[in-house]
Image 1 (cartoon, rainbow, N blue to C red):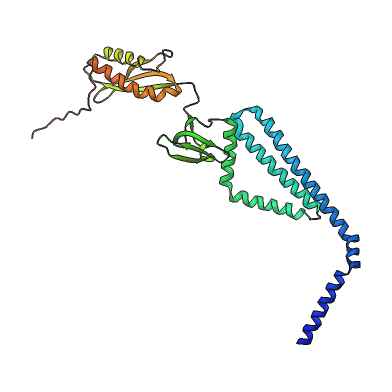
Image 2: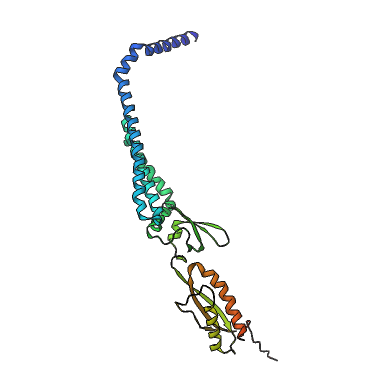
Length: 290
């Protein structure tokens, strides 16, 4: 056993000496090493040039897409990101090919992997596609107050995957773009003016003409209510315990809630001063004696 070990050790030492022989090294450098060195230098040069080209491409794209304005910033960011990733993939293939790596199986493998990942992440891809639809159709922007997928709030962030809302009671809601685009979207901030609707019940025995005139003058006096379009006060319905009036006034979008809260108070106080009763729900009970 010891003799066999010594023989193996001698063979290894002789092989190392042969490889370390300067003449062998020179032969390798002349035949293979020079070619490898040139490949490495060429790959390094291509990588450096590609790096500069990608940076220049991103700068040019940002400058070109900036002409569409800040309202298309999400689309611009997405386009630049996709182009950058494609450029990096192309550069990697070129560099590996220059180093002598067979990139054919790698590309084929990436195709299969892409198919598998696409199937596995189809929900995410659906949100990405919906994000593109939102970006191009532009139903809302950051800062708008919206109703999306059954939730209301101000849009605080918008990207290619999700919409983030901040509710009036300071909750944060993240809605996937697939759900946002697949449901009705109400944008309360899109238009300059907004109508404020107040509902007031008055007693059946009151003077309706007087009640309507009083409510109309009251809504006109609310700070922020516009003269054009003109406010109105009309009978909405005849309910069980009251005649219901609709009192409407138009205001700027930003003043909506101020007008809504102040309007309810001012209309109620005006009706009180005019002696127009606002009844409580009433129920008549007839007793039948046996």
